Image (cartoon, rainbow, N blue to C red; front, top):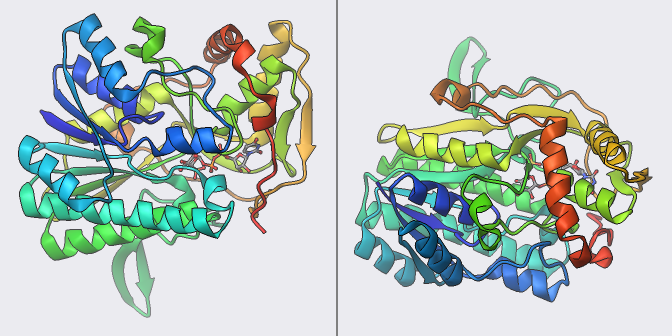
Length: 382
Ligand code: USQ
């Protein structure tokens, strides 16, 4: 199939480009380098220096003989996006081209406005490009488990049937985000649901939890192909952060009580999920939602796992409770359903000590690059 990947330079984007390309699909990768520039501006560059997208595609071609066609530009520029849709006529589009960080969206008004504009207009443009150029092309969109928040009821896979005063109907599962970033993802979902109903396009919205990991089959071929692994407070997700903290001797930054529970997923499984969603598209006029996680942990459980493996490897790992810079429930019920992707064929890579140990080994190699100032600056939600 011919796939356009928007946000192709990102932590998920680049590994996804290689994953599809390795399986013989034609891949077009688009990125505006937002995250690279923001990381430079905010002094929080990734652990492993990564060649730019054009260079990565060239290295991939040298190693595999396969092309990944790269275009640098902004998805919120509609003529740019539409022209690429007309040129390549994608059979599937994967939309990662969003500002992905909750803390970034809470820094100040300008970054909040950027997040709203970038995330909503990019999604709007993708919907229009599909409708105007390739109306049958399925959109695969990365949503977030954070759309649901932490309600005191079981979380269903996207939809819930409600009986009210003797009548029943099916609705999107109630959502209440705990950052502006997460709120834009709710708005994206609503927007796509509107266009699914109105134009009959087809969309898979993948409600993903925090991703961890550094290794993928393709990236392991050459260190220049590795994902951009962030460990900083802004772009780093918690487990990646904890491993780096353990290696550099920084206390593990548990926010508040640490009893916050989330659903987690290995980077390798993210790739498999997106691929499964592409191989099995929904029908026209359907918004299909999967909860893209493979297991749930509290922050303290993650800290204890990292501490245990770290200490076995000879590190002294301190777990420290920090005043929570975020506004979130620190103790709550959490019981999400996540069977849909397993039913499509996902075989999860769970968070074992062995997986953690491998992460430690990679991080150790780049220990000299760790910028301790980026680890915790305390971006406050209030
Ligand atoms: N946390 C800590 N200490 C840290 C970092 C985080 O205790 O040093 C806690 C947070 O307070 C939160 C949980 O760990 O309760 C997860 O935080 P995170 O930074 O790993 O994830 P989050 O900010 O929610 O965002 C990440 C991705 C985002 C994705 C989301 C899925 O950056 O793109 O949408 O995970 S989810 O969390 O399910 O909404």
